[in-house]
Every structure is written in structure tokens, then in C-alpha cells.
Length: 280
Ligand SMILES: Nc1nc(=O)c2c([nH]1)NC[C@@H]1CN(c3ccc(C(=O)N[C@@H](CCC(=O)O)C(=O)O)cc3)CN21
Ligand SMILES: CC(C)C(=O)C(=O)O
Ligand SMILES: [Mg+2]
Image 1 (cartoon, rainbow, N blue to C red):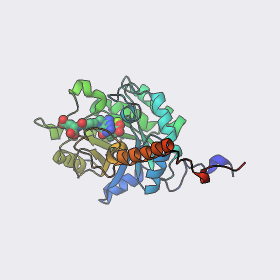
Image 2 (image 1 turned 90 degrees about the vertical axis):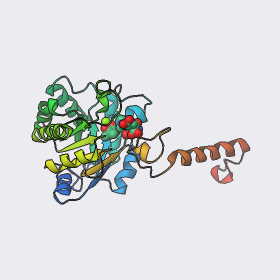
Image 3 (image 1 turned 180 degrees about the vertical axis):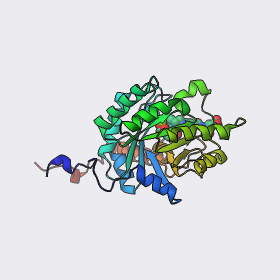
Image 4 (image 1 turned 135 degrees about the vertical axis):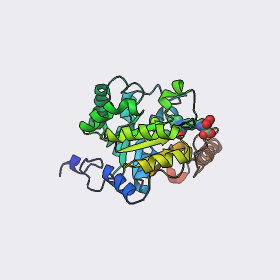
């Protein structure tokens, strides 16, 4: 059998999570989980742990590249991360953010970017920030064969317009606005809608109003799915965690102690030991 017929990212993998499984979760009152990943090995670990979905987030600009915002990361850079993640997965559905500058100008621009991501990396869908004003974009990408997850509430790519990192949907009539934006995305063909930093009660109303599943980050417990950035939930990020993060491990301490141990052993001459060497 040809190598590529058994490749882990083979598009026809029969047991791959797909939009239909996320829809079934919503229909049957079940939840699903998503974490970001940006590289082959972490994607492998998350996939083997059984996560339904993995997001190649443009948060890579922050976590992988050290930028202060998500604005600088390019489509070409996202393609490197996305390809690495897809090669690490067998079961999870892999989604990738359309980065700032790769979709806003027109439905055509969005569709060309989405197609590049699918063709060059093997991802199974894209996520795009923005609501009602992007329905034509969602429609064209979906018609082209690329499943689209919407992203409303706090949309980090618009932080300069929104006025910083803050909860969205606190103004008068916010629930109705959020429901309208989410419904517009759904009606344009979006298979799911993600909400970031939205009051829990509004996120619940949106989830109840939509036929398609919702995903939340800082949006309370009522969305169909939940997503976190992996370096946050595993404790690799330095400094203050956002309120919406639960830290499940302290990898920064684990790694730091291990590196100090190695450093110490090298300086002391106790590493390498005889068993790490080769006989002439
Ligand atoms: N590492 C990381 N984690 C994320 O969750 C994340 C990224 N990067 N980059 C892209 C976006 C930006 N997001 C963020 C990042 C920080 C806050 C934050 O600091 N929130 C504070 C203040 C909230 C407020 O003032 O209302 C918090 O305490 O939650 C929120 C969203 C979510 N995404
Ligand atoms: C925080 C999630 C939803 C995201 O968009 C990202 O990681 O870029
Ligand atoms: Mg993002």
C-alpha cells in the first residue's frame, strides 16, 4: 500500500471527528473539548488523550512567537503550524484560525486563504473572527468545501477597535445582538460558533437559540464545547492567567526543575554517566 494511503492525516480516515459528530453532541446534549496546538508532538499527545477538536490558533503569535497581540502572524506562518499539527493527529478534527489580514477584504480573499490552508496542511476546517458582516465570506468558504467556525464576542484581532481585552455583551440589548450575529453565521453555513469572553447567561441564550454547536472560552458552562490555550491550562505561560483559565498542571515548574537538574549535573560532571557513552 502506498505510504500516503496510511498517512495519519489521510482525509478519508474513517474514525476522524467531523462536523457531524460535533452536531450530534449538541443534538444529544453532550459536550466536547478543544485545545490549541501548534506543533506535531503536542498535537499527538492531545489526539491520543481523545480530544474531539484541536485548534491551530493565531494565539501562536503570542505563545509560540512572543508577539504582544495576534495581529502580526501571517498565513504562511499559520500554514507551518497547521501542517505540523495535522501530521500529529489521527482522530481529532483540526481547525485553523484565519489570521488577521487573510480574509477581511472579501469573500474571495477568505476563500483563497481557507483553500490554501486545506490544500497545504490538511486541516478540516477554519475559524474566522467576526459576525454578521462576514456572512458572505462564510457562505463562499462553505460552498467551496471548507467548514467554518464563527468567532464572536471578544475577537482579539479587533482589539484596537474594541478597546482592549474585555468582556463583550454587557451593554443594553447585548443578548439580542449576540443571538443575531450567531444566527447570521449559522444561516450562512457556519457549522459552529465560538464565543470568547461573553457573560455566561448570554452564551447560554445563544447556544439555546442556535441549531449548531457553540464553543466557549470565558463564556460560562452552557456552551456545547469548551476551548483553552494549551500553555495556559498546563501552566507554561508566565504571569497572570486570564480569569477563564483553569490550570491543570504546572509545566513551567516541571520543565524548570528538569533543566536545572541537567545544568547542575553537567557542571558537576555527573552527566553523562558511563551508561550514556559508547565503548571504543
Ligand atoms: N495565551 C493565550 N491565551 C488565550 O486565551 C489567548 C491568547 N493567548 N491569545 C489570543 C486570545 C487573547 N485572549 C485573551 C488573553 C488575555 C485575556 C485577559 O488577560 N483577560 C483578563 C482581563 C479581562 C477583563 O479585563 O475583562 C482576565 O482576567 O480574564 C483575555 C483574553 C484569548 N486568547
Ligand atoms: C483562544 C482561541 C479561541 C483562539 O482563537 C486562539 O487560540 O487563537
Ligand atoms: Mg484566535
